[in-house]
Structure formats: C-alpha cells, structure tokens
Length: 180
Image (cartoon, rainbow, N blue to C red; front, side):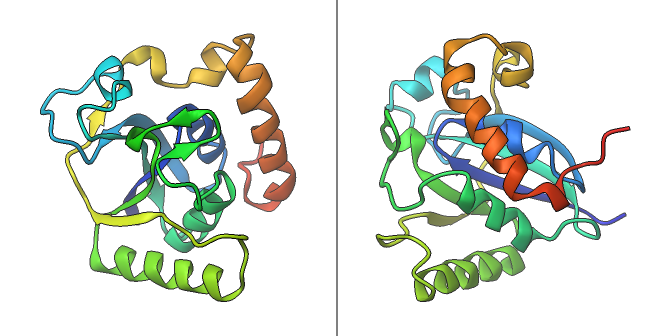
C-alpha cells in the first residue's frame, strides 16, 4: 500500500468530508483548518475570518487504489471553484477554494488539471482555486468530524449536504467503496 496525503478546501468542510470518505482508496478524511496565522485555531475563530485559515479536509489515501488526479477531479465537482472566497451563502476567505500540495508532483498535477479544465471550458468563469504549499493542519473540534453521519436531521445536512452527496454518489458510482 502506498499512502499519500491531500489537503483540500472547498468551502464548508462538512460537504466535502461526507463525499470524499465514500471513495474507494480513501483511508481517512479529517475536517480542519490550514493556511492561516493562528497557532491554535478553532471553528469560531476561523469563522470570524480573522485567522486567515481555510476550512479544509485532510485526506489520507492509497494512491494505488485512487490517484491524486482522481481526487482532484472529484474535488472540483463538489464545489464551484470559480467563486472567490465563498461557496453559496458561506462568504469569507475561510471558505476559499484551495489545494495545499504535499509534494512537487501534487503541485504539478493540480496545475495541469486546472489548465485542462480551463481549456475544456468546464466552468463558465475562470477557476480561482489557489494552489499553495502544505501548511500546518489543525484538526477541527470533534463535533465537526463525520458531521453528516452524526447530524443527519440537521437542516443544513438535509437541505445542502445530503442532496450534494446523492448527486456525487450518482456521478461517481464506480469510485464508491463497495458496501459489505
């Protein structure tokens, strides 16, 4: 098994966490914060927009089962990478679209994929996703982990996360972990 790490921000971490953990080859997905100046950020301080952190997920995956490029393709389909510092009603730099690369190969893959998506005009507007070197990752509080599974009746989960997850599962059936 060849393990690798990816750190991605696509707005609210609850939405992408629930989808990415369904992928075959993904070993773990942890919600947290990266890219800011505070040494000990928490959800409240990050939501204030004053720490400079983005809400991100850190993904541990087996790159023999799922490639980094495939993870990025899924990432780009889970949010609108043309919105600067926002996703839907979530506004602020903490909701920015960002890829924190862990190696030069990841940086190269991210740039190549963005260039391909731009050439193919997959989105109506230019992609504003930032590609930045790995920064310290800070795990979010426990109530933010496995959010959908732990809060299935929460109105945000019902109205936003669950429909997005269903759309994701329909689109990526071949990549979803097989249920026993």
